Every structure is written in C-alpha cells, then in structure tokens.
Amino acid sequence: MSAEILTPPAEAPYRARVRRLLRGSDGGLLALALLVGAGSAGFAVLFRWLIATFSQLATGHADYAATPGASHPWLPGLGKWFVVGVPVVAGLLYGPLLHFFAREARGHGVPEVMYAVRHRGARIAPQVAGVKALASALCIGGGGSVGREGPIVQIGSALGSTAGRLARVAEPRLRVLVACGAAGGIAATFNAPLAGVFFAMELILADFTAQAFGMVVVSAVTSAAIGRAVLGDAPFLTLPAFTVDHVGQYALFAVLGLLAGTAGVVFTRVLYLIEDACDWLWRGPEWLRPAVGGVFLGGLLLVVPEMYGVGYPVLGHAVFGLYGVGFLLFLAGAKMVATSLTIGIGGSGGVFAPSLFIGAMLGSAFGELVHQVLPGTAGPAGAYGLIGMGAVFAGAARAPITAVVIMFELTGEYSIILPLMTAIVLAAGISHALSPDTIYTLKLRRRGVDLGRRETISTAARTRVGDIMTAVPGPINAERPLREVAVSLARSASGVLPVLDAEGEYVGVVTARVVAEALADGRHDADPASLALELPVEVGEDDHLDQAIEALDRSGCAAVPVLTAGRIAGWISYRTALNALPAGPGGVGS
Picture 1 (cartoon, rainbow, N blue to C red):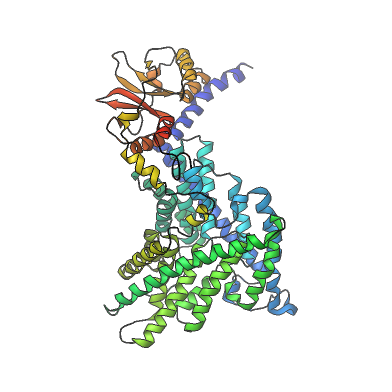
Picture 2 (spheres, rainbow, N blue to C red):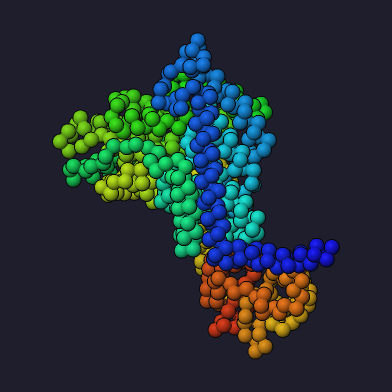
C-alpha cells in the first residue's frame, strides 16, 4: 500500500520534465519532428499500399492507366464497360466515410492545411489522417483522376498537429510540426525529400526561418529514409535523359513557360467551374454525391481510359514520344476535365500530379511541333515534356522553388536546371498577371478567406511598439511564494507576468501553465525565478507591430514585455495588437 502511495510523486516530476522538454526546448521539438517524420513515412507506405490494393480489386490490374481499355479478368463478359460502375461503387464507400467522419478530408487537401496553419492555430482533427488515407485510396483506386500529394500532405499534417497537441506545444511550434508532417509525407510518397521540404516551406508555412527549416529537413530525411527502406530507392517516375543541344532552345523553353503558365491558370479555372456546376446540379444528400457523380466519371473513363487514377504510365509514354500532337493535346484537356469532375462530385485527391500530367502532354506536344518546324534547333521532344511538367505546376500553384526542386529530383540531371528556371519563372509570372490566386488559394478565397492579409501587414509594419504598449502589469518578485504568484496570475488578463530579481532586473516571464504544473507536481517551495521563461525574441520600443506579433507567436504567450536596455519599459499583448490593427478587409473586422 505504501509503495502505491509513494510511486506517483516519484513519476509525476519525471513526466512533467519530459513534457516541458518537448514543449519548450529545441531538443524536444527535434524529437517531435523525428516522430512526425517516421509516422508520415508509415502512413505514406500504407497509403500507397491501399491505392495499389483497391486498384487491383477494382480493375484486376496494378495500374489500369498502363493497360487502358482492358477488360477485368474477373468480369471478362463486360469487356471494358466494367469501368463505368467502378467509380460508383467507390463513391458509395468513400462518400459516407467523408461526410460522417471528416468532411474537411474531401477535395484536394492542401488548402485545408493552409487554412489550418494560418487561421486555426495549426489544429487539425486527428481522425483526418485515417479518413483521408482510406477515402483517397478508394477514390484513386476506383478511377478518380487525382493525385497522391494532396492526401499525403493532409495526412502528414494531421499527424504533426496531433503529435504537437498531445505534447501541448505552443502554437508556433505546432505550425512547424504540421509542416514537418507535410514534408515527410511527400518525401516518402515520391522519394523526393528536397521537394517535400520546399513544398512545406513555400506553400504550408510560407516562412523560411532557420529553426523551422531545420526541423522540416529532419522530418523529411527521416521519412524518406524509412520510405526508401520499405518502397525502394527508385524514383516514382522513369524519365528520359535531358540535354540542351543548342542555345536557341532557351528561347523555345521561354515560350513553353508562357504557354504552361497560362495552362496552369486555365486548369485552375476549369477545376472550380466544374465544381460550381456540380454544386448547382446536385440536390441530394452529400454522402450520396460521389456515387451518383461516379456515373459521369465512369462514362468519361469509358471514352478516355487513360484518365483512370493518377496516370503516371500515360505521362511516361508522352515524354518518351509515343503519342502524336493531337492526342497529346486531347489528353491534356481530358485530364483537366477528369480531375475537375472527380473533385466536383466530392472525390478526395490531389491536383499536383494532374498538373504534372497536363504539363507533360502540353510540353511534349510543343516539343514535337517545334521539332518538325526547327529540326536542327529544337532538340528531342521529351525535353519539352519535362520542362512542361514543372512549368504547369508553377503556373497553377505558383510555387517556383518547389517546381524546380522536384523536377531536379525526378531527373537527377543538373543540366535541366537552367532551362527549368527559365520556363518556371515565366510560368509563375504569367500566372500572376492572369490571376491573383493559385489553385490552392482560390478555394479559400471563394470561402471568403484571404491568406494575404496585405492591409494588416502593411499597417503592422508602420506601427511603432512604443506608441501602443501598455503599463507593466504588477511584476513578480523572484523570492515571492509560489501560491501568491498563482493568485496574481489568476487575476492577470493574459495569464503571464514578468519576473524581477531583488535588484529589479528583468529575469523572464512566468505563465499560469508553468506555475499550475509546479503546484500539481508538489513543488510548492519553487521560487518564481526557477520557473521563469526566457522568451526566444525580445521586443523593444522602436520595433514595429509586425515584429511584436512575430515575437508573440514564437513565445507561445498571450503577452510579452517591451524591453529597453534590459529593463521592462512596457507590455504588449495580442489584445493590444488587435486593437492597433485596422478593421475591414484583411483587418480585425474582416
């Protein structure tokens, strides 16, 4: 009996120390990044296995796009007509799953993660990982003409968010863990760790701080290493060698970049046009929508079986020059329609692979045309297919760094870099001129969400902290009893107070959470100085409001001190910051 009574006090401080290390130290964040990377790799392996399994069951083939129009070996009497019913059966399975368990898992996934990072404190429901993996695998295996990257980004991000919330890390660290999950998912799924890192930094975080970058790299490397051990080291696409035979080809690559950027914008418009049409036509329950819409998708697959699933075999045939110009352009348009229809009827899958597919078709068609017109200058048509892949993605997603890196990883050819950068920069530029939104942000803007916050950021950059800071709220003496400190914190507006030593010098801040944990662990004699936190970023009177907001975010506290020469000059909180920002579009009142 005495042993049972004595055991909890011995274990509680240890658990509390572990929690504090995970929440507050760089080593703790590193451990969580490693854990998220490993978990993302596990889900990536499971996700690819689910897709292969459902594809085999639905069609009798490992990848139906590699044998378009073939009959099902189990249903030879139906011939190629069996494909009409496959999306209907798949929709009957994943439609209720999405509707009743995780509605945010519907669609391509990346916009939902971007929204969670910017507007929901990086909080993603834990069930999203499992539901997204199963629903997307059913959708792709059942003929949905979508990609794997959107689902694995959302799956990995949900794992990162769940791990961070279980460890009760501050919001800035939670955002980093979400990015770690996204990077890890892409790294393992596509055997492309660099692409995973830059996708997460450029699209999910939109932030290149050294600490965030380091943690995302650790997660991506961990995930890629596990993925390679299980899935092998081969790239997910086999592509032809790339060569630049004539300096005049750079002008042709530039023209292709402009065409591909325009195609990326067209793809974005077609996607949401067809989605709007599906919304306007459908009047039944949402859980039934994928099954009913599956009839139309099945009809399209009957006519163009190359649209079944992700379509990597068809993409490979295009860049190796196995199709004519007319058929290549037809396939590019069909992919736009097939992907848009899959998303519009309530399917779950990504738009990254479709943009690569469209780019490969467009680029290969362009290459064959210029090869016929300028045979001595143009070079092989497959080179233009490779450039088109990256350029269309850059035009649709406006993520030029990710586009360059992933194409480099796919080919392993350094010679691709200069032509690729030429085309991608022009593709991103023409895309920006034609549309203010990307294929990801347009979905959020249609919901009234603007990720840009241009007006808010502009005002925050002009506002001086010394002009808006408030008085210091009753600092805590370092020798004050902990119970009295708890009473003061309970009365404070922000649950955080500054700690001063006997000479009145600033020591750090103490939070209600830290004091409550100390009291719960039985450390009633602990002095406030030992519990004081040293904030990662100091705020001065001459700093601007945007810098103060960043300091608040990185501290994980609701308020931070304003320091001058090491002494507290004032106090700034989220409430003060919000009151200083304008109302209206992009401001507090939006």
